[in-house]
Length: 216
Image (cartoon, rainbow, N blue to C red; front, side, top):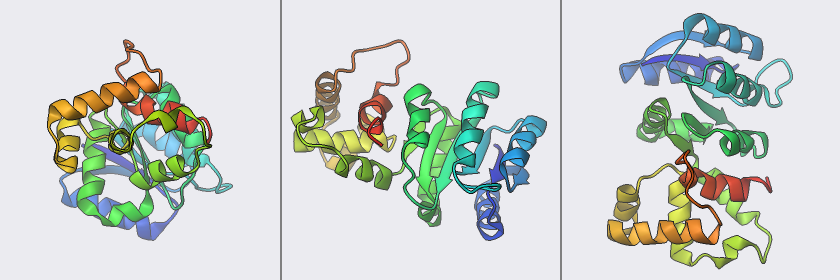
């Protein structure tokens, strides 16, 4: 896989490139600010961009702006956003509009190398990944008497794991239940959150992002 790494921290950039290279991926370029990141992707056409949310010049949401631009200009390129802190709002808006080949993780998760590389693989293959701590932050920010309150405790567990990008079989293994049971819970979540089937087949991510993200 051909990867561009964009982060202003030389230490983190070195760590990311080493982890990815050791796993057999080709680091085609490194960028340290918003404009360079965009130009680098245009010049190298990578399979995946690992992108810091906050970079020069302003250290606000440069990475989100880059990701938003890339979704239009290079929709086939996977984008994995990394953030030092839970940064809601803009990042989750990306998922609400276009969730394929998109991920959002906290930088602390990089030290869990297997989890990080699994996220890299899933995003590059067109899947979606949301850090479980970000999902937790969304859940704890909910107001009372909202549709989420209609979910049972088990349905909420399933919803959280869905947002992490887990398949039904992976959720079944984690919760030690049958796949059929998970399928029932997933369907109940869709029903209670008013998410009918659509041609985009992204209801799994919409179940968390569309409902929870609009309050971020």
